[in-house]
Image (cartoon, rainbow, N blue to C red; front, side):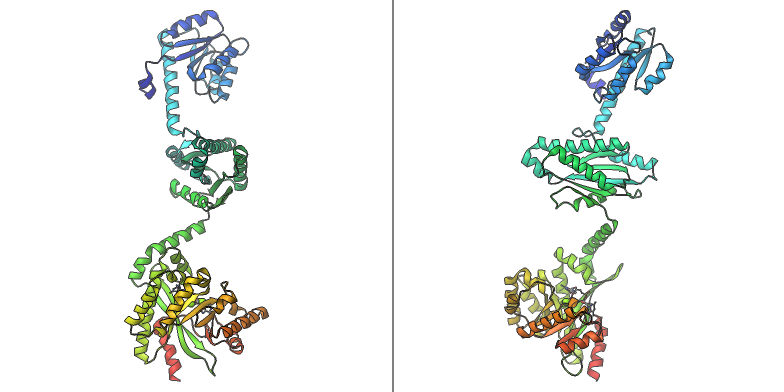
Length: 565
Ligand code: C2E
Ligand code: MG
Ligand code: MG
């Protein structure tokens, strides 16, 4: 027994009887009235007029075919065209078998032969048609979202899976549409306005799919819509049309849509996941205030996954000592021959799966996630331990610089932490050099000047890293407390080829002279660069020309070379 029968079995249904011959109308009415209320129409025209007024209360139509003014076929045709009438089942009364095929094509639910059957049979036919139609409505309602008439999420996903089972080879696109800042719209303009927006989006999606004659859609959550449709080569047109029609209907420039498209969706992964990808593309547009669309980029996604993995694994990698400090020598070039004076500590991640990962990849990741401070402290510690070992083993100090990142400057305990590291290794503060990138100085000038002043008072030497890549003003530079300027390697790269770059280098060297601090050039790769820098008056150089950053055991060989001579 269906839900409706159970809930509403005592409610009398209404049947519209469309029959032009008075005697037939009379006989049938009498039979039908035993169980239903009856309204009669004498021809097709009258029937449509009654339906226009009463379609909500009519549960069944009994339709004669041959009638004056408008025949049964025309009535059937009109019913099929109308969204409101289509749900009402029609039983066609005919004695002509040939008409039956056409009636089925026009959507008739059943037939009743003329002359009429046994009254019990007639009532049974009526009952069956009504129950079937009402069941169908119930199913339809549970599959669809009330507000927009699109599928709900559950059924949508089922139909998408069903599609894949039967049409595996079709190229499909997964599309996600979202209303920007919908919650705000709801609270600003009220819920019913919000509903209007959603209905508009739903209506436009349905209109599009009707035109395509293919594809399904649902309202997934409050303001998120999913579409699963055959691949369209002109996303621009699809998204552009949808957005344009939306803007025209809503006429409120503050309300916009974002559309994410995952084209050629990979059918070997779960449907839900395919839509997650479209959602990723969609959410890339989150910050924008205008409508737009974005295609999912699998390379980008893989990179995101990779980054996520690195972040997740960072703690364990630290505990397992997967991070190794490499050392790159710095040579003073002011004398007759280059002299090894210090080194820079540069971190490497020896990853069990990905091999050596360079800091260029993970430093900015960790910075954004607040993990960098932990890593930096690890490097400072390892470096201090190493300086101590070399000091003990070779009888002299090789000062090593460590990188202090922007986020470290905000740590109120920075000075204390650094001091405790040098103290616990029995080093003087001057033996652990600190590099702070120029951009940190421009970020928060007051704070950094204070921190650097404190550090220098404690005896630390501070070098400004990547000089020339930030936006320091001459004015600011002259008040900066620093011990050396490290020129950014982009200025060194082309000095032998570009007179402009060479002149820039000369200017920077002049600035250093004006500040009365030595200069370090990094990224020196060739003999020409080295000679040019020497001639220009640069003090110290670091770069592949002398050595790449190497593990401590290899670095020791440089000592041997240096001190044996
Ligand atoms: P940086 O501090 O400016 O370090 C210099 C970078 O230049 C290093 O890259 C070094 O390997 C590279 N380099 C040195 N000589 C040459 C050369 O001749 N040619 C070229 N093409 N490159 C050269 P690396 O090790 O990949 O580090 C990149 C950046 O990552 C560093 O730039 C630094 O900002 C950051 N970093 C490295 N280790 C740490 C660390 O322990 N903590 C923090 N906060 N940052 C670090
Ligand atoms: Mg550095
Ligand atoms: Mg640098």
